[in-house]
Image (cartoon, rainbow, N blue to C red; front, side, top):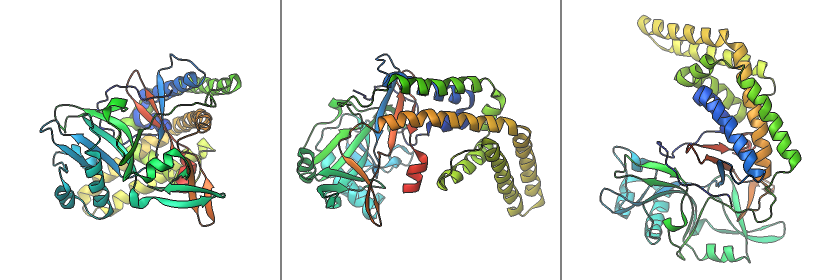
Length: 397
């Protein structure tokens, strides 16, 4: 059983990073953490019961829904990410939803308010809404009849004659829970990755589950050969780690503008479906892209005083990037190794049979696809990262 563990983190679970981006986000500690995440995943999939990492399925739902009881007044509410803001949009009734939201989002939140108030939520939970009743469709795919719903990019399909399909058809909404919040105030709440079985009760009008899963087939267990292959890559990453300069890693992580410049170019390549196949060429592209963006910042300001400020900023950032170009190459080599190990693990996890089948809808019909990805959770430190085939998912989007 791969399941959520119960532990607290300091941050709200509003955004989660890709494993390989921890190198850029958190420097030395992020790089070390990414390697340790992969070691833990390898150990877990090799059958080591002492592994310090748990895995959950990442569902492609929308919108993100927050629901439960406000600890400040013990009133039930639903909302979106704004429930934790200083000027929070917390909906205690349908009138609040009409005031705070509009269109399809408002309609879905009204269904959520009416139905989730019946499930006796303990505390505050976050989940991904999968459908409301009017989203359900009947589709024939490969000569089999399914109940389908498509909250975002992925189409989820459940065989028409299954018990799960009967439950979904009789419900008014579906939701996958993944995070628990605790605290004495809304603004001060802390996130715990995971939802216990006792955090909500079953009701006919809501199909709900947490994002954990069981591997009843045993197909997720790595063979000795597969384990050795991941270990070899991680050994290379460990050696390369010692060639990276802490100053360079931590500057990229702490100097917000430099970090953005490096990640912007990488994200551009991902959106174009391009992986880093040549780290040296990618480093040169990053530097050229950074020059163009910084030059644009200089050119768009009007006063001489601001031009001087922007020019000095440009000179400082470009000096750092150019003088450390060889380190950028090594950083991208490190990310490649992390991606290689990650994808071996992701491909293994994808073999696990889920509750539903997943498809991508194309002009010519339906194509089988994998889940959006997975979430790896460090049970010792409370960190979590995304394990996603970014190129495939970006292409599908």
